[in-house]
Image 1 (cartoon, helix red, strand yellow):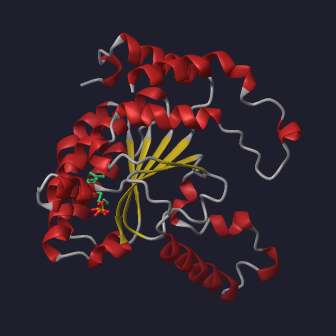
Image 2 (image 1 turned 180 degrees about the vertical axis):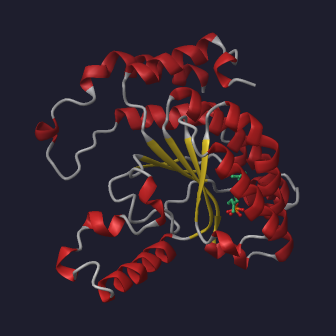
Length: 280
Ligand code: FPP
């Protein structure tokens, strides 16, 4: 189904118009999807039920990000540390990932989503690797939202890997140590195809990066919500984007050097605030 023909409510249309009117839709959003286990435990469900319902949140957020014109969405779906979880939970998560890719691939492709991954992908079960490759090959030339799945991923792992590869290039004489800049280093990271994230969203109230895009997030805006991932849906995503639209990004400069960023869009911002307050 084409996402452009989806019918949405009048309120939702107003939110989208105000968000887009601000001209401050983040180019790259990263999400640390946390709280699946707590959501399930609060309801006396097995933990894996939280992951299953969390997949519905993934579906909703991917669609809305694409509709709004976010160019890059990176989801922290499985960290290197997550391998330490009980075997049954890991198995469940892996089968969920595989079925997500299997079930969603046609719809994602039809809506021009390009699927990519970061992380130690060769540690994933064969079935997941196979579906991931199929999804990436099929969607390689799509020019819509780039959906990057961080799987078996850890930022320290990626940074160390890059240092090792860069050191090999130094040893081979391809790079001289005095020429190493932030830009040179960045090119060795698995995330080199992505622009730096503008906004990192974390659910479940925890105030940590948990080894997610640590190099890349140096200047990202961070938004933490108490909502647990399985209950995080499009309205919560709009709230996060509205909060981002209000932020002043100084990148180390002063307010006056940056000039006006926020006040120009005061009308759209107050409309947004008004609607969001009325909805919650
Ligand atoms: C963290 O919650 C979440 C995960 C480790 C897995 C995230 C996976 C999904 C949302 C499912 C599918 C994803 C895709 C991309 C299809 P937690 O279990 O650590 O929660 P807790 O802190 O409450 O225990």
